[in-house]
Image 1: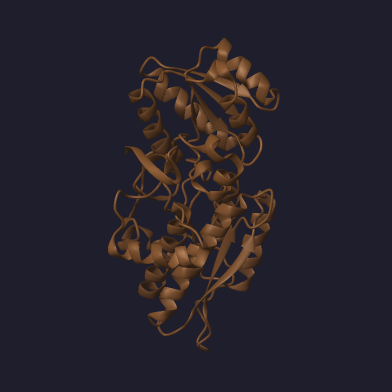
Image 2: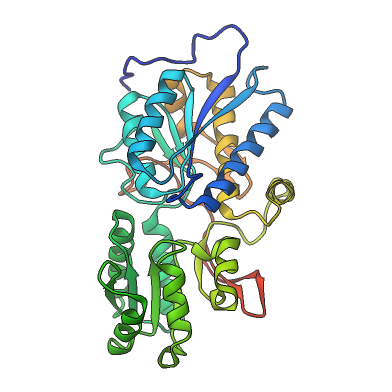
Length: 370
């Protein structure tokens, strides 16, 4: 692996901290609640590492930068963190933002462990510098398509906003459904309002509507319109990207936000480590931690293991991805080369299709597992 000349934390011998750069959406238009959960997981992971002696006796330090769901801002943050001498990058939730960060990290020779973004094409070319914990979109969304077909839905409409991420999701769903006789109708949310979406659903005789659109808007308005249109009383609303996972969704929609299946990356039962971390994160967040918080914790667990075993030289960190074997909160984490994926990939984190229980909106029902 060719190592571009760049600042590195490798030569420090003064006992200073080992620093990891963290990319997190903490302000709008980023998904702030997801960012808060991701950061909580990252921070708790750092606390656990330091309580256990740090990295070779040196404290682990998180240097946080807010991406605000802006790819250019994320790329600039990668440049800044590289100059600061961080040993590695962690985090990011939004796929398009993570893609910009991964491209810049690859160019600079800075190891990046992506926590949550799922876009298959996280980089344009195969790279040794980037690894990912979240399942690739093609894996998770195929499981979601299997769920839809198993529940008897083959005429699917997607309310989609213009985005590489949403376009990729639409393509995955269309390919999966077409292979088994299903159809996908795309409703362009740059041209339609929620009332027009309802009319299109009736006209196309769709039995399910998937929200490939941002939260809170236009997703919340679409749900309200569909839920209160008597013509659509039997239609399933789905949100594969996970919008209903967070409490903000429940607060915005109340009972209208229940029974909307989404993808969640958690096992049926957490390990003892996972259960301990869940308790700690619940206390820290003041609410049940989402799967994104566990992704944050697992990111630090992997990086701490790598840094402790291989040192803080960036090339050695990136070269260690294929040798990782770490017990995370959701299973044993190992990276491999996966067909069609340009980064080192954990294949795979557990995948569930869940929804909020109409009888108890604070409780999740597991509908399908991948």
